[in-house]
Length: 137
Image (cartoon, rainbow, N blue to C red; front, side, top):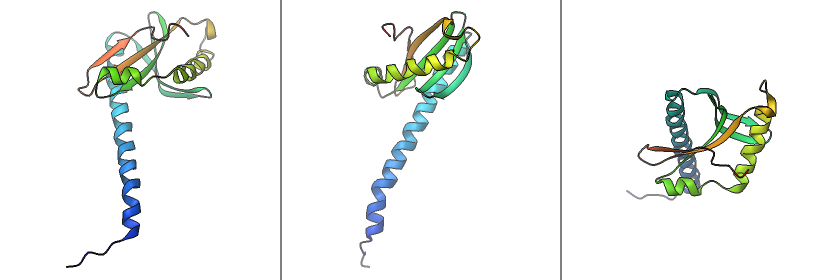
């Protein structure tokens, strides 16, 4: 049996592969966010929003605990070092802008007590939380 080359299939393969990678990344990110949200709620925090999007950008998790508002960026990677390295200064700036917008919707507005945490999740599902990770911003 002779196989014929189909150019439509040849060009579709990279598109399908890219879509599949994107879907896997989305699902891995959602699972990491679920894991981190669970850790915070087990510690008594209340989830206010997930993947909240404002004009300034998106915040993965917004919580309230006994200290005030907690804005959490969640990074998932095979290892903790890779997850930590995935956060850029530009992204921190966008998160801070979005956090200001969200805080403006709260009763105390920008006077709300707040902090920015970074949560990293490795390929085994282990999570580490760095509180006040954006201390310089």
